[in-house]
Length: 152
Image: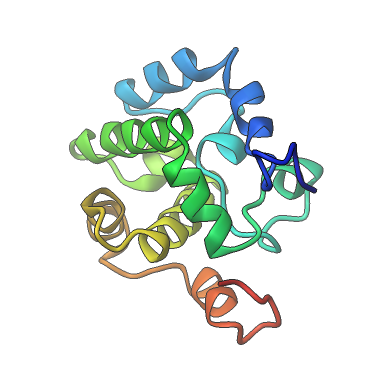
């Protein structure tokens, strides 16, 4: 799905859905525990990793879309803010912060954005801190094209 000509990836879908919950999401992350339902559109993951309607609606379809997300003045800043809050959590695992299966979504999101922006240390820091520096194998496989998802 595409948005207006100035928004070929329909990134406004993220802006609209984040508007009413962003303050709550950042408060939850600052407290070290996610309690409500916003994972899909705050930490988006690559298309094909989730089967729910929400996962499909808010999937990132390519590295180009991930770049556009990061370059978006609001979305890129918000993602970095949220990752920074997660990275500041002390003595907690990704599972303790997000619960299951959202820790898996966070892992795949960080893998996607680390691939899209290797120069941005926040994503690699999250992977190091919570996942022993390893990217999510399904995300990496999709990015490499080995499971039939042409990303690039």
